[in-house]
Length: 289
Image (cartoon, rainbow, N blue to C red):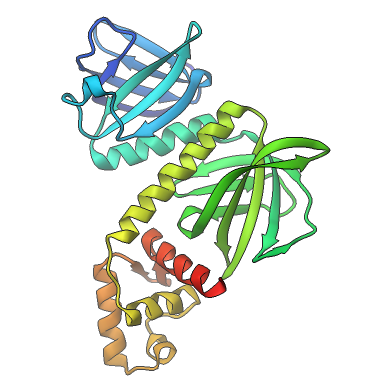
């Protein structure tokens, strides 16, 4: 394999192209162009250009008794749809999922309008041509005059819609997200329907993962106020003033939100984790509406 190897690990997998559905243990190799599943007796190569869907956790009914944490890769071969189910530990599932989407989607040409709306106001921005880059928890839009990134922890809505793009009606993804304290809507179109569908799948999977983590966390009103203050630039030194409480009480609030993994303390100050950002984004969305 001449191209760069992105991931290389050993796991159990099952292919519906094989005679038996029972999983085998083998080597999983992902490069920039293909996914290879190999044992000492067989090797299956799946070109990334043939992949049309990627799902996490869903296992075909006939395989439910074999697997736990999985990634299912749907691909086309000889005009028919097939699937490969790969098992990995929970943290590895998340990493491999991003590697797959990044290999397939990064560098894809994209037509984007940003921002299409600020709050409810339609802007005068036009569509520009750039390129996508997939990162964990975000989608970056590059090679345009003002590159930007959509942090999926700040997303409150996304949907496919038909829009006029350069005089043609095209399917675009409209995504509403928080950008420096403002609620904005960005719109973008990808030429190939297969890649547009995969990009939509990535958005849904990443958003659902962050949302589920945030929903499991209970926060008090004071803790929420602290998260909003930190999002707005407060640090451990001025958090008490931002909340209007004494330093001891502020330290206790900070300790609690750190325990709940909503804040990452560092030498550079305080930053919100993805669930913390999503909780703040939801609060800002409610205030703006």
